[in-house]
View 1: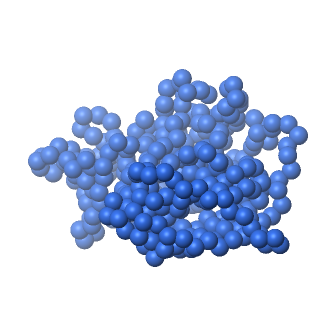
View 2: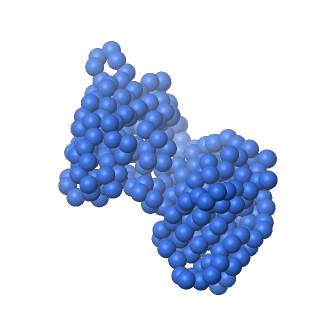
View 3: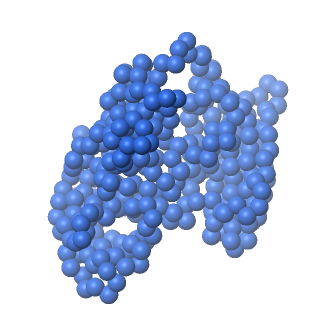
Length: 327
């Protein structure tokens, strides 16, 4: 789903207990090898508390990797990373404990298994089974460094990938980190491709973020993967209205104007206008609040057909289901 930016558009998947346990002890690394004549392996292990184990295996660009992780503890997950890059291309606590995808580059891949912070701090344990397979032909090495069909070409749409669960991808006014931030994107967001260019050793792509306002900017190409048009793109519905709100502790409920861009099944991006200026961003997936502005703490509960949202323990918003689902 495409989300309008702001600086107001900050689609961080905030840390609603979505990050691995703090690394209070060294991460154990284990190299995975496949038996001769096979293309996969099944590993059984155990975790306790803040233990984290990384499984390393080599693969080539263009091959398909499948990873399945099952555990006796529902707080157990895995992340998938490229080499030593801390930016995960799959985050289990967000996307689930199954991954299947075509690998973007050749080299080592790192499968990190862990317990969520809350479970780790309680010293909980987990037995797990990790199954991984790699198949398909490797992609031939390119003749030249030709990104996206020549920097001016490429797909119509990019999808953001590899951004950490509690972080966002900056969209800047120009192709370089010295330019002002004009918007931010989260994993899974799709943007229209307007062409790429190199700035030193970094590929930057000009993108268009669509919503109530169409904004263009530049994003680092390493976080953009080729994608099709967003599902239901033409059917997305945008609306405006008023919702009950209070933006200070102890303040009685008043009303705030809002705008919403809806997908389907309770997937919606909501921007609530703040009395002092600016907007509060609320990101819903399948009727559940999954994100708000970085640096905020959000909670979500339901009372009948009302979605009760609290930000930082002081701001309160009441969103009827009709805001998220339409109707």
